[in-house]
Amino acid sequence: MKLKELIYDMIQIEKKLSHFETRFGVKSVDFSRAINAGELEKFDAFDEYRMEFIEWLSLYKTWLSLEVKYRQLIERQPVAIQIKSALAA
Image (cartoon, rainbow, N blue to C red; front, side, top):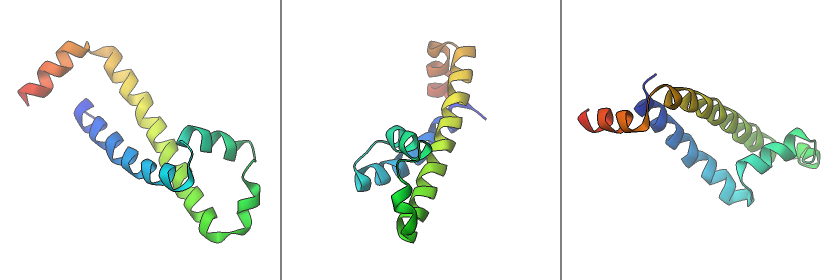
């Protein structure tokens, strides 16, 4: 995957994450920590929240995976070279 495509995908996911962060009033990283620590079990009884939480957590995990790939790619190619190639495209 090219760096430019990766960034595009990350931005699309960030838009979706922003929706959940605004709706529930917490950043995705804090939501992920809370759900993994079992702090949100009281919401399990509510189907609406459970489904949203599953989607939110899935999107966040996908974003984290893309972030790792981004970091790996950016470490292999100096930023100046990446900017130059992006402008040439």
